[in-house]
Image (tube, rainbow, N blue to C red; front, side, top):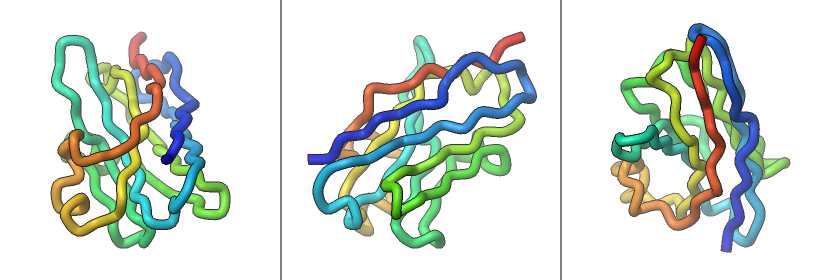
Length: 128
């Protein structure tokens, strides 16, 4: 079992920045990848980014590439999502996810059903 707790959401103006945190607890965390999904009202859930244990295994959605940065502090079992140059279309509930770090997951990380554990979500609103 893995528990995930997100924090850091809020209201920010367009062009601003936010940093989301995901604190993970449970067993076998070293074998797990961590990712972020988001869902806006009336829209499908979207994979945003993920990070496997090695820094070379990081993925981003095209919609956030160059603006968002994911990082992982293994000592604190925490994953961060630094979001810069935020746009109104980034408004959504952001969910932290976790799953066993397999090659299948790495290849299809954007598929929500492949992730085993989900946090409760944190709201991000980009508006002037």
